[in-house]
Image 1: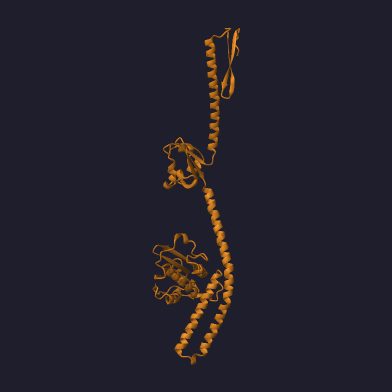
Image 2: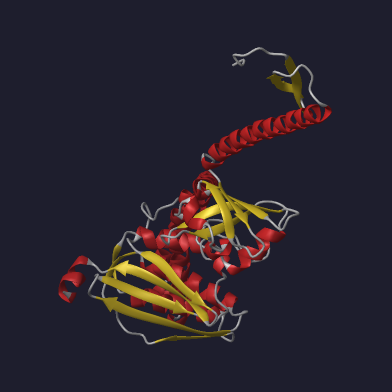
Length: 420
């Protein structure tokens, strides 16, 4: 307010700042003329007031900007850490609670590397792009984070952690869906292909079956006119041909995806019979290359196809011999398990084992590790189809010292009752 007295002198001095005039300093008094010293003090006072006013306005702007930035930082979904020269957190903000399980105040003074593996720490600082790493939270849970680090000129490092756990999970699920769709499409293509192949094979197989039956009848009619040894040999040849036709029929049915509908009616049989049949054929072809041991024990009866099981065991033995480089020792084991009512036959080789990256694919149709033209990739797939058609399954264990394939079949009902 103006003084309530006669004013003989009044001076208005502008208060200037960097952006222009900020106001006016007004001085008045009873003297008509200000002395030079008084005028100088007045001007200095006005200059100081201008600087103070400018500083206050600047401080208000900085405070407002800091508050706005702090609000923005605290609402970020990413966790942001500012590190000192020794890697200790001196400022934190954003989604630290979701990433680390601790609020910003709980992170200050801690080492940022305690949530990371040894290999990830140096990798993050050296990388020019965000790196995906596993972060172990304070509660022990793990999160997948995309981490980017920036080294500032003042020995300050800022690290941003973005939680991508959900995105990684979604990406994995999407890849599984793509793999499943691809696998199903491959099976559909194989189904269409093998249906045509099966149809084309069934006709010549039926001719063979009919002609072999006729040939057997002719041999019986000529029994009196053929030397006994010759007749026996010819009958054995016919039986071998009939056995081969039955195996071909089983393969055709397996290609169709099921052993149902096979011309060989399912019946009770001792699995050891199938083992002996498979060994006879295998040793006949690989007499000088393979040594196969089998104790010859009888096993509980199962229901299915004796020639189908022989075909499976023959295929597994041949695969084992191939894995050993075409020469080596194998063992066949048979056992009954009363606890789950099953019979298990094992084919054990001494090869180098199945690589981990291939183990999930060996039963896929058309998958093979052999050179092009050396195999169709259907062997193990057909084996699995044949065994599953008898209500069983095939599994394997593998390592550097060899692989064991286990064919598991359910005991026939009456055999299972006796075992119990």
